[in-house]
Image (cartoon, rainbow over all chains, first blue to last red; front, side, top):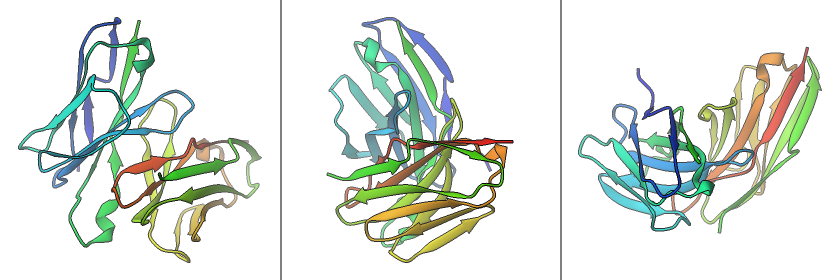
Length: 117
Length: 109
């Protein structure tokens, strides 16, 4: 079975530009979350989506936005890029569901490495 | 606010030398504690989910345990291929993962 896929794998942008990152969840998973990981740190939560609705947002500026499509895939958009946005961007999917604890586990994709010059 | 602290930051072991990694946490309404393995430049690979104090799970040379304030990842007779960064995360009432900074494990042959 295919795991979480992300595209592109690597990206180089300059300050002020815009970037769109894409994620396809594991088949059957309805929730997608986005994380930012800078070197030497653990992933930091950005957004969580379930059934195309935003269910949670981390402490990130409004330059960051996301959406989820009817097929449960997702996009993360970042406007007006800053040098500090350079990081590994991770997408994770989970079944979500209610009342069944086992569905809490999130499975991660390989990430998109973004470098802002 | 959920918080996770992992120790040590880095650990070097000789092959076969068993040890434990620590994850201390505070969370509002624990829905799960998760351990992941991450190789350089790659996404985290899921290892274990623990849901309640006293729970234990094992996989090959790894064993994860959970108390009300901590989780331990025990590594028995590690091999060089176990070298990686091990991440601990909690999911609370908001159902978002809060990660620690990880423990970078190096196993020397």
